[in-house]
Image (tube, rainbow, N blue to C red; front, side):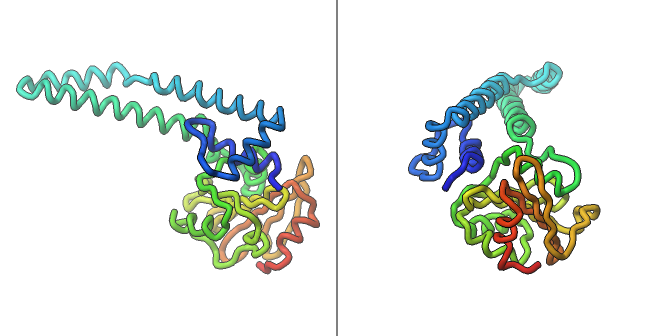
Length: 251
């Protein structure tokens, strides 16, 4: 059963542009928003805010000193002036659009890589705030395959009960030199599994056995290390449910 957290994960990927066609999971999230005024209000605000920022960035123009430099380079060669003029103008416009789009998506709309602090706290805060995912699929095998295609180093073993759930999606996060992966599944509530290389977070101080922490608003965090990797599992669930999710897995 899809909950509001999962619906937000899906809807957050469609605040700009056209919505997907023949996507049952998006359709379900959209229907949930239609039936939930609070969720619909959030989605409308998200779409409006992103559209406003996008519109402002599309008005971005190259700095005056860059334009002057380009004009000077064109005027220095009158033989090819007309041709070079349009080429350089095209390059300047392309450069400005690239800068604008990169700034928009990396620093304004999506702040996923800006979370700081210890790995466990960072993972919990990102989960609680509602992550944005790069790849969506209900098949967890395809999710892990996609991460490996992005050259992400996954360990040989992941919790089998976690992988047996209906997948939501994943993304690599720039939280270390070799990145951190988040994988989300739906098991009545959304479970978020973070995987990182052990050497990237030397101060994480995780154990070879499961440790559990109760967090705010009914959330639980589980943490451990295995196969040279660090793991953090978060969900708005009790410790008993978290233990059940990890029952068939031995680090």
